[in-house]
Image 1 (cartoon, helix red, strand yellow):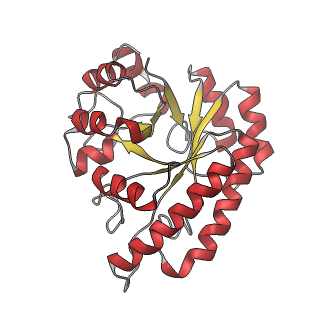
Image 2 (cartoon, rainbow, N blue to C red; image 1 turned 135 degrees about the vertical axis):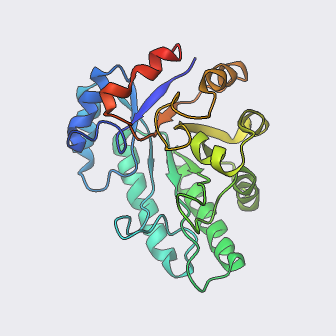
Length: 259
């Protein structure tokens, strides 16, 4: 059965962040996700989850100077200590918020660093993070992101993600599969998901072009929702899209898709 989680970084932005939890619950969502919790005390977020009977299904490890354009530091050779300190911080929040999995945005290839050197650092950091999270009962995910939205992002395809997982030798590292990003990078959505289902622990959605609601673009979400059920995907699907004309106004796609 399709289970949708509201991404509070992109949905209900008409309201301050801590008020979005109630807005999501009022709209019928049972779960939420977001990019980062670190601007708030974990208890503030935990209070909102409890008050609105919501489950938090995902947030990210610290990703460097986000407002300054950084999109993760896991592949930065000169930021290893910072990355590993961020893992500890993320675990502290994850335990307080009872979130079962964290995503690692691997970052943009630093200027002057070869892909080989960046990959070596990345593999080491992922192996470290996956081990630390496993000690705390938390899964680690990595997400391929399209190179149009984030030029220079180190991880762009499902195949690259699987190769990184194999290189770490970890049994606690999985794929976050974003349908929008992978439509832009590789297409062949259904077959790719099915082939890698054992490694996919979270799915996110948006339509293309525009990254708007399902039903606004070229992706056949009616088919994909049925397909995910048929192949046995039992995780959450994060609604990480840009509402085209307001969050509430755009939620009709859920009913239109029979969900």
